[in-house]
Length: 133
Image 1 (cartoon, rainbow, N blue to C red):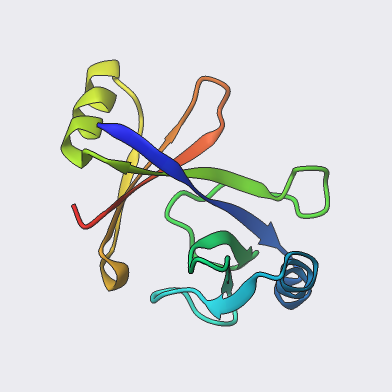
Image 2 (cartoon, rainbow, N blue to C red):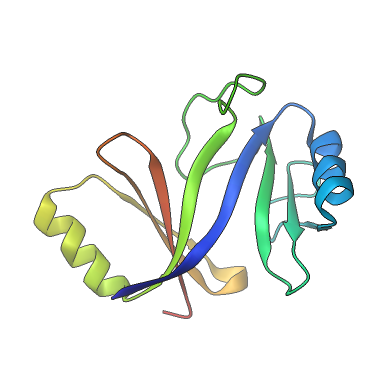
């Protein structure tokens, strides 16, 4: 098992369109709809020049696998989780089980993505992404 890259940052907002425009205008990121089951009215993903969706923007009412209270507008209060792209899905599950860690699994079949959500010791939510595993 190894960490390959920081995958993306997820931002929860009460102004989906304005937030997407901000990242497009300020950073030159390309705005696209998130994959199903997300909808254009609840999720926009912002892509870099290499075609990576590095900022995920979700409305307050967007469905989330791991939901928690988030307050847009407070300093860093809209930061929902940190996502890492990894390999070794089964090994990660074994490591989490060995630690007795709480976690949730999710499958985004439309893009061949298996996910594990767990919190670090500081209660920072981690989204561990495994593509094609």
